[in-house]
Length: 417
Ligand code: FNR
Image (cartoon, rainbow, N blue to C red; front, side, top):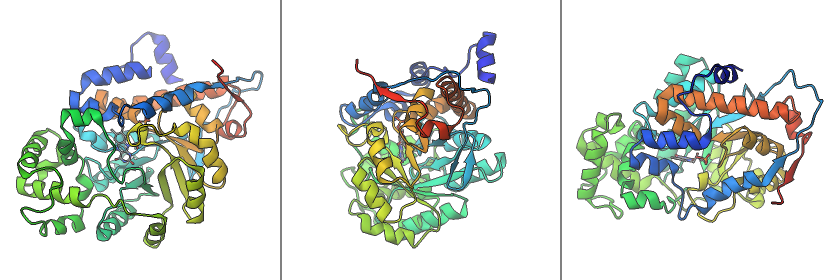
C-alpha cells in the first residue's frame, strides 16, 4: 500500500519497479565484470531464456466477486510463519555488487523476516551475517547453503558453524559439483578474481585455516599458475570491500589454492546423504532438483525439502526451465515443501509458481541488482516491490491467501500464441 501511494505521489523510486529497468540501472552502477558475473548464464544462455519463456506460457484466469478485502500472503515453512512466500537464494561473491555485500542483504532480509540463505561462496562469513541479522531482529530466519567439499572435516565444520549461528536448514546445492561453462566470465578472464572474493566461509573456518599450513608452496594449482594467481589476488585484495584484506598475501594465495583443490566433491551420490543426516538435526533441503525421479529418490533418502532450480540458467545450458519441472516434482514429493527458483521477476511469476504447487519461491538476481543500486535499502525495495506486486496480483486474480492459490481456486491456462 505504501509503495502504491508513493507511486501515486509522483516521486520516482531509486530502485525501478520494472525488472528490465532494474537490471539496466544496476548494470550502469556496476563494473563490467560484476555485471557479467551476476547477469550471465551458462553457454549460450538458452536455459536462462527458457526460464522466462516458461513463465510467459502460463496465463492467469482471474476470478471476480470473491471478496479480497482481507488478504494474507503469509506461509508456514519449516515451522516458521513468514509474511511473504519468499526466500533469498544463496548468491556468492556479493562483494562484486556492493562493498557491504552479504551484510546489507542480511539486514534487509532480517527487517522483513525473510529467510536468507547464506551462500557457501559468500563474501562475508555466516557468523558476521547472523550477527547483523540478530541486531535487526531477534531470531531472524537464516539457512546455510553447502557446497559439499572433498574434505569431510570441512563439511562437518561448516555444518556445525551453521547450526551454532542459528541456521534453521541446511541446503545442499547439487547442481554445481563443477562450475558451468560461463562464457561472459571466461571472456573477461576474471574467474580467479571471483574465487578470491567469494571464500569468506573458508577463510573464517578453523578447519580450513589449519589445513593451509599443509599446502606446499607448489601445491595444487589446477590450470591456474602461481603468477596469475598472485596477480589476481593482489587485485582482489585491492578491492575496497575485499574479505581477503584481512589476510597476508601469502595466506590469501594459500587459501585460494586450497579452496580450488577442495571446494567440490564431484563423486558424491545419494548414499552420502546418510552421512550428512547423522551430522545435523536441521532440515536438509536439496537444491537443483529438476526431475521427478530425483524428487522420489530425495523422499526415499529422508530429505526434508526441495528447491527446484537450474541455478538461474548458470549450470547446464539447455537444461529445462525450472517452472516446467515443478509440477512433476510436486507430484513426486507431495509431502515436502518445494521451493521454486530461476526466473522469478515479478508478482505474477510468484503467483504462477504457487498455483503450480510451489510452497514458496526463491529470489535470485533481482535482489543482487537492488544491492548494487542501493545496498541494504535497495535489497529492501526490491523485496517490498515484489511483495506488493504479488499481493495485488493475488487479490485481482480472486484469491485472498496462498492456500487458496495452491488449491487451484484460480486457473492457469496455457498460452496458445
Ligand atoms: C547464484 N546461485 C547460487 N546458488 C548456490 O546454491 N550457491 C551460490 O553460491 C550461488 N551463487 C550465485 C551467484 C549469482 C551471481 C547468481 C545469479 C546465482 C544460484 C541462485 O541461488 C539461484 O538458484 C538463482 O539465482 C535463481 O535464478 P534467478 O532468479 O537469478 O534467475
